[in-house]
Length: 400
Ligand code: AMP
Ligand code: ZN
Ligand code: ZN
Image 1 (cartoon, rainbow, N blue to C red):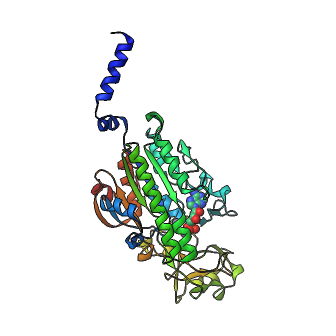
Image 2 (spheres, rainbow, N blue to C red):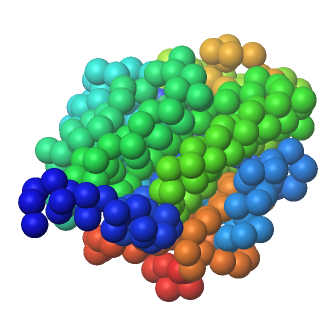
């Protein structure tokens, strides 16, 4: 057969193959982990989310119990490592390590937040996947900009809240249009609008509802875009924590209990992380460790065991947790107390976070599950052995 004849034959055979058979052989499923920051579990019942509700109805859904403290960085890292903050090393959005006593990690300070020193106590899913030869790509996720255990995702972007949501979705769809050998099999995606509106206007505001509807529409665009290119996908849609309404009438002033120069308030708000300015100052312990009306304070060694918090040297000497809705302050707040907040006890029902999963074998109501259980499920979906972690693997056993 001449070369032209054999090319012609190949073309005729290809054209004769059913469409779906061709695409099935061409594309392996992608797993996409989507975080909608601050999407409280019950937001799904507001009738504002046609796309997420459809994914939930045809897939699995439930609620994630966040890890304490119910803050963004500790919980995003818990979800991708299976380790609670005490183990994964990201014990707060703000923290101090005794090995670097004069600097503070905070999520708005890239000099610290992008330093591997803070992240290397655990290994996130994209690093383990990369080492196992699974191609990864991150459209934002706390930690994904950092070289952890000397590895970054082959495709990652520096976090920038100004990157619009359509652009985030299009970036992922562009990745999926690549040739198979450089197409990712595990992708992350992050949205901040629901959390931002929750802080500013409170969980029951029209602004939160608008943000919920907008993010839902963008997820609809992602699903449609994947379908248009016959790209099979498993979607895990999660949140890091919920949101509780706060207001200026429910404020606890640490200045009413202790003179502020004698403490270092590493974190304030729904919980406070406090170091005595002079490590041996017993007055600080006496003033704070007694009972209070709307908060409870403990030495880090004496926190309730169910919080799984206090063994990491990065946890401050005294941890005070406000009653849900209350705000602990050390002097004037950086922002007016209004709207909503999170960071409370992880047993507070209003801290519960979204869980929706859709894809082959992902079915049913999972009830309330600790958020560290997402990690073994994620690893199972991407076909990589999970590292030992705090998770039991019970969710991965049930799904898929
Ligand atoms: P929180 O203070 O716990 O409410 O944190 C939520 C904020 O974290 C969001 O408003 C985001 O702007 C911010 N954020 C999310 N991901 C990152 C990131 N990778 N780097 C820096 N900031 C981030
Ligand atoms: Zn958050
Ligand atoms: Zn927040």
